Image 1: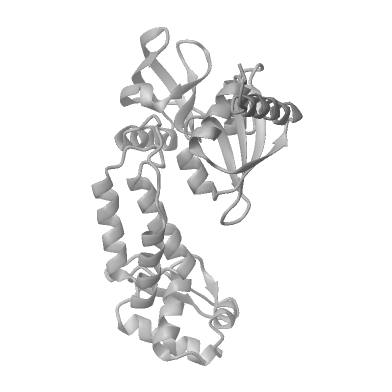
Image 2 (image 1 turned 180 degrees about the vertical axis):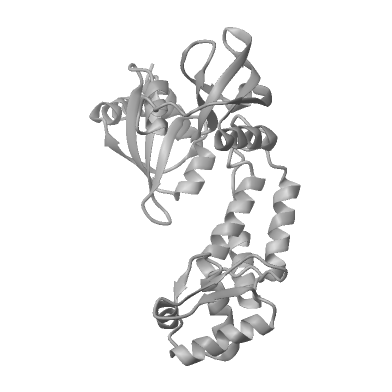
Length: 321
């Protein structure tokens, strides 16, 4: 059996998931007999933690909101994921225009409530990781908040929108917020155009929630993100798949000039699917970033690189004109 202090921390961590725990299942998860579990629950209550229980064969426990809230309890992987997410936000990797100061303040507050051993581990992780600040359209958090609240409340929104055709005023029924690569989009039913439309969030200004409620329409597609991804790629776009010899986070920071997606294949390799108008531009970017890679497909891109490489090598031969 674990020490009482470690056992109590583990119990708080399980209860903080918000679910109702059947007594037998919670005792199994804690690896303690039911009597010890009841004693630990009583101890939490004496400390002010609001643990509700239902007695009987279907008895269960759950932690509810109350006057005394528990400290933040995170497992090791949860803590690391949280601090890395905050650091990514500070570096601009989310595409949302959080200030580095706000993300750093949140990370500092989190650090203060972590146990010493876990705090050292997250500090080591942050010291070892470096995020790039790839060029991307930035979205104000206030805009994101207004749109998300309107979607939840099923209220129409009005906003000014600037596109290639010039500025316009839109009133829409908002349905989904979608992040694709470097940009955020709103997918909505445009009341003026009487059709589904997608709007880049960085081109939306002064969004205002109206008092007009709406019943959500059936979406025209099952997967909005996949639909937009396919729509934004011209039929003439070239799809190139590479295995990069660096981790996915480093690759994303260094290859921000090309529209594409990254799939981790371990700590030091990833699969990169790029969409380009020509092989030439991708070859230039790969040369500038100096990332090792292997061409998966298409064969034509590998052949183009081989031809280009031979031509460049001929330029180093003496007497070449």
